Amino acid sequence: MLTAREQEVAAFVCRGLSTREITARLHVTVDTVQDHLKSVYDRTGVHSRGEPVALIYRQDYLPRIATG
View 1 (tube, rainbow, N blue to C red):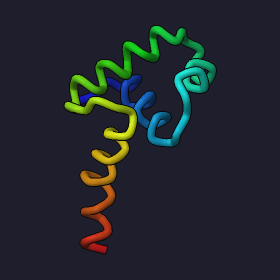
View 2 (cartoon, rainbow, N blue to C red; view 1 turned 60 degrees about the vertical axis):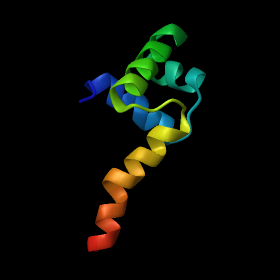
View 3 (cartoon, rainbow, N blue to C red; view 1 turned 180 degrees about the vertical axis):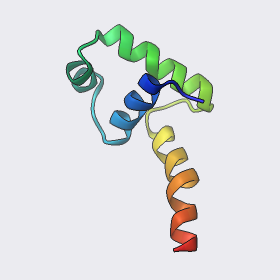
């Protein structure tokens, strides 16, 4: 399970925001965003920015499409 902040950072990544754009929105340092991203990667087993997007799509959106 991701923390609220990790979920927020992951959502921004999914929307295509850069690390600098995320830092500006959250008013934190680049290092803090990178730490959150590392935690997201570790907790979800992904290794790149694109993988969380694919993971969320597979887990959250594909099941809805299949039943919709």
